[in-house]
Image 1 (tube, rainbow over the protein chains, first blue to last red):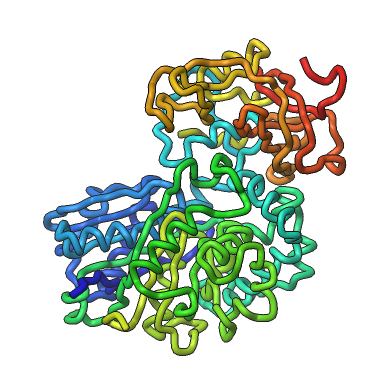
Image 2 (image 1 turned 120 degrees about the vertical axis):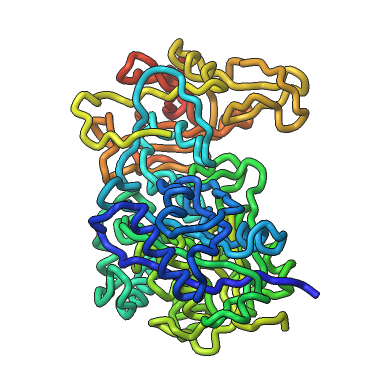
Length: 392
Length: 147
């Protein structure tokens, strides 16, 4: 009999451009909300997982929450690729007996205190020891004027667009759908603010000829937290558990995070294919079993490549798949139903996971009818979540 | 890993490369006007980005060799906003596939953006950085364009 882990609590702060408080406070508020949602005493948290990039610290957060005795900590590399991988780590800890109540958090003042979208140039002089965090090869980009995440993304995406005849208008259709979803999600920064394809086409180039302003995610302040425990314990808790039917990471050879240029054919996303293969194998499910997909969307081309990498359409066919309402709520495969990182907020992917949980509980602002299985993916990490408490 | 320098007033000129222990040879070579690659001294295969161990035979014996400087354009873009720090005009950023099987992030120079095509043949040259170092960039391959 297979054992499973489950998400039993979700929490978040408001999403803004200036939170007015420390990142540790955002983390603590999101964590408190998630634990209250689960009906678990914060003192009982015994595992903590976040990104290597998160500025807050386990001890500091434990002190805020009054954690009695922390028994497991882990941090995931790879920038936003860590987001869905946190579920894999949490499930491993719970199923392996290393921890019983795992708190996952990510909190940042990524608009008011620092901005990922601003050019980044290391100081001159000396030898720098780069540990990497999975992003060490960015150093090869900066002296050439590729100094922002958009520029790193666009170098690979241009090849994809050329190979399959993908136009800026094609990419824009993803933004239009996600802003439509955000427009009816009160938690979204762009609540009440849909866009048209013409507005996308008129927005200025960020990286010509790939990314316009409206192809890019937001920069946001905010915090998100999740609580994971065993499905056995979850059955006794107050909220409706969401089962982690499968979780996976995949970092194929020569793949790296966003300056991902060294694996050969840049029209494919080997990490998405690897994650997908493991997820479908472990769950026994297929892309057709998913009622929605939450795909890491720092930039629109990533949605295209993940639609293909996770098997929702064939290689090169995402530009057709995203048309005709397919990826809208009510369509074949609703994608990023909260508005995603483009429309709701950029909490480094974590707010796309909480949305999947709401969909499977039936409490989402843009509810997908009969949602039973959801894919959450951040390229190198992914999970299939289910509101059915045992495998079919 | 690095710092944001969003308002550095003295930051004129192309940023210097960051020297890391396993890639110093590449940048020191560039500063001398040489394009160098890492080759395994045991199995003879190239690796880039540089690393302290050969991923095929796990040897730590490596040699730096002078590359031909000839390659083909794989992708190319222009960063428009925010303007890249240290450039008078936005550069053309490109991935170059070198003859030796190495792929480099670099710039394309002396070419109109509209005239660039995938697979276009290019030849290395070098451009100075603000701190008196240099980086390899690429121009369309034609007589007199290389060095």
